[in-house]
Length: 454
Ligand code: TYD
Ligand code: MG
Image (cartoon, rainbow, N blue to C red):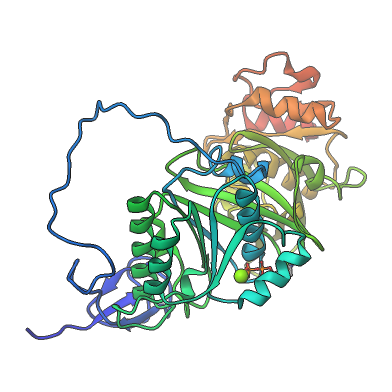
């Protein structure tokens, strides 16, 4: 049989039979490289899996108690996991290098171990001495966590089968290699193979496995995206280097709500929980100024208040700048188009900058109205009324759509000392949280009420 070459994209994992500069599946440039093919199925070479046994089949109606979950006692982590750790689950924690993944997972390992879970921490990046040093610094040295510095997956699995832990942490998946796969550690093929082995191991032995995956932009090391389909839960650990805040975000969770976030602060003594993120994100806010608007958002099950900042200035460029940090650029273009088409407020010839304060990333459409308010306020150089929160989704027709969980948003705003809110008409407000409400039905009404008809 003639061997055909396989080329894999390190960003999305798509395979093709020829090299090209741009991946046809995900559109990324320079991410395609030649890979040795995966071993063809569960041959005798595969690590551990025996073949040919009949599997027992069960009915859908079979009774099963909900899985007992283990709590770390770190609320921000337990909530993101969907209410604790499910036994036998495979979890991927992705994030940029240096963001604090190892710190978070060492703290998690220690917390689970102190709750009585038998925990093993396998580091492929650092020597045991380094991990111990960090543990001492974090004041976790007394936690009953077992350490190993190893990258050979076969040895790791053999050890785990003997030790029978309940929780295994693999830091990181890019450093692991399976000796039955003829490819360098960190390549798509290796990452996929090792993640698959570990996930299967988790299911078969009812051991929770948490894997760390680095995300790199240049595509040299395989992103953990290819692994996302295999695991039960995908968490992203994000944050700006210049900021202290770190956000653990669930993007996929078979055992709980996705979109849940946990907020941490990186301190000299490790990651500290932030139990009131709204207060933190608004802490840098000064006097009301033009272009600054507080958005009452919902992240998962929790309301979170953040500040949108906009700057609008005459542009020297023929193509004015549109720069966004923390929000979607396409969505900004849409809001600008709606403002122009439905309200007759042009932004042509003006540079537009939009920023979410504190390094937070917002994905909710309910932020539309807050963004529109920030843009108008910046353009007109007119601050919004003090102590006001804004939220609401804008449709292309210029109508405002009511947002889910209006009541929770208002309650959170009230709790943080806000006195007024601008929200779309319709939608349950309950008592309004005691705030004075402005409830426009469309964008024109909003502009008229907030900025005067002019
Ligand atoms: P680390 O967990 O090693 O990141 P990752 O595993 O994601 O690559 O964290 C690295 C950064 O965290 C490093 O720049 C120093 C900082 N840090 C603190 O600020 N305080 C601490 O207590 C620790 C352990 C790390
Ligand atoms: Mg690390």
